[in-house]
Length: 283
Image (cartoon, rainbow, N blue to C red; front, side, top):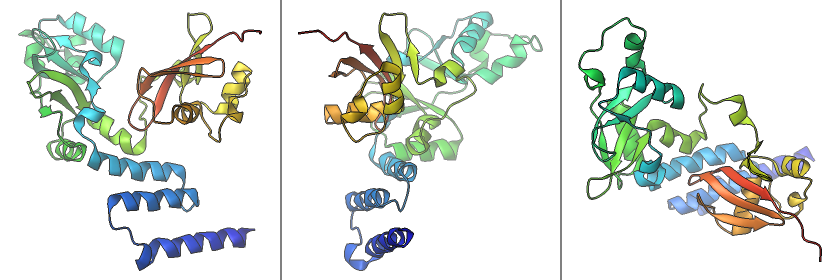
């Protein structure tokens, strides 16, 4: 059996590196990588990472940015105490600081720059304005690979994204781009509760479910049989299968007696789903 498996790998590798099958463009190369994964020459995680490299060459900043509506900002006139409360509540390392509204970003505040002042080791004169770093502004149309190169060369981690009219449409971080390649990067602010696959909410029969939840675990928890519906491993995979396309944030669907809404996703992964189990009506 092992000999047969080795023969399959040798056969595939011969095909991969033969002149006849040499890929001539990126689409063909992506197909070769996908075939390598299907033939178990590489694992699925490796395929995802390689695909992520292709993605950063194809995508624009607008595809990976955090939208304006989700940005946590600090007003330039805020007191040190108020700023400290925001940092503690959200746990980010960098914050856009605004004057009038989100379209008027006057600087970037690093949480670490507050330590000496909140600890009483230094006196803050002139308010938080004196601590601000110059914001980097980039257009929505900027390619992600160029953005990553700029992050690396200039050693900054966050950029404000503007539309064609100069309004702030979002922000992008180096972490957002790296996650395209290596997957989600958890930090020290992620809690035990965040790591749970299935979380009961305050609403009746409504749950927050991680997209990576294995279907067998989902079925065991909800006493269902969704794993019989398709040859997929996770609830995110089943959602994609039923929709016939990759689901976007906010999309809803029904699978058996479950109403499902996509709460959080990006171009490559479904992170969180809202799941409601409906009663089966008796006819």
